[in-house]
Length: 336
Image (cartoon, rainbow, N blue to C red; front, side, top):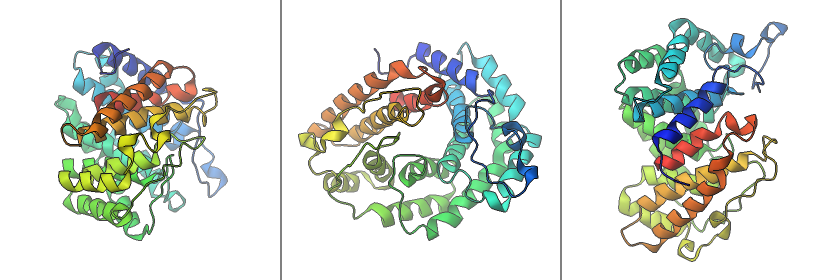
């Protein structure tokens, strides 16, 4: 099995995303209600991001399609991708999404995972050569500004990071959002993220890597390292990384070198572990590339990434619990 992105794999991923992006049900809403009038269907609540089982998966499903289209403009699914984005990224639909976000009871909606993925989606639009992309980014701009402000309000009062391996992980959110902030030259947001990452993580040493948990799809330890790779200059990162995981050259902590076992892919929580294997591979490859030439840790990380990728790539569409989101993390790993 290849562990590099090919046009054939891109087409497979695009087909998976197109099959769930506008599939309204089944659906898992994270929805706070203040009255009976708030009892509405997913599409009534979220006129753009109503598919893919949940809001955040729908957001990064669009990211996945647009990134694939950017990489492979002649993708067989290109026409279908452009059509579905054009139909959904409209001023009217954005107004509907904004009506939801502005309601006081939704102040913490999708914090921080969905916030970060939305900004990553906007970044993808800003980086594309596709003529329609600039207009789509302009259409989504009210939501982009909303989530920029959400991070600006939240991070200064977030005394502690969230080191879990699920949607609440703050290192993952900051890593994605930093890429967006640098892309659009939002210097204040980039500086806030960098300062927050240093405040939370600069003094972290001897990471124990007590993972995985039973429903994790992110490695708390590797995700923190990936954030710091993006924040610290090269030599400073290598020094920090050596303190953070001092025994890495000896394949310790051992848990980071063993793909997680997935016993039931129809169970959405247990099935998260396929995502853990993919996101670990993403981080392992990315971190390996940041190490000096000849560093034995780099070869070890790359070898381990291959094992993690092989454990998960055949299972992207085993059940809908994985199909609605896993291809996104497969793409992150394959591109790393």
